[in-house]
Amino acid sequence: MFGSDFEEDYIMRQIKNIIQSVARIAFGADVTLQRRMEQEACDLSARLTEMAAGGDLNGAENRLYAEAEDHRPAVLAAGLQFYDYLNTLDDAYLAEHEYSREEIYAGLLHLTRLYDMEGVVALYAEDEDTPDTSSD
Picture 1 (cartoon, rainbow, N blue to C red):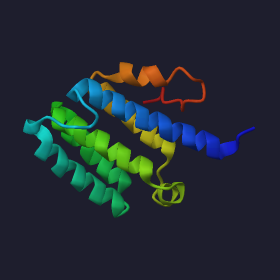
Picture 2: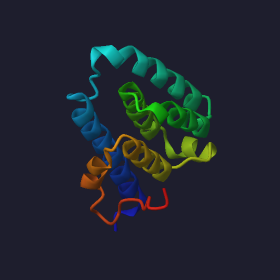
Picture 3: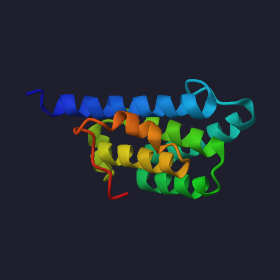
């Protein structure tokens, strides 16, 4: 009835809502980072965004996961900013670089699992239109 544009908007809203909720719980504010990790998060986010803007979306995501191995809060913050950035890219750019909106969702889910925050994602995953990421 609504077509793929409606479905695409729905996924984009879900990703945005998850990012905002995880940030509120983890950092106590809407993407406002605590002082002690602000610079680290901004630096890493800038590097990841630069890689993605240059077309290396998968490489940027791999770098994020390598950084997340020690579970620093700044990396979670940078990851949320990274997925928020990816979510702003248009579908043609994502497809051109062999990436999809569903991969953004799956990557965000994986990141929240690494930080034991997947329960926040579950708040938004009750609808059956949410992408299936059970193979993660």
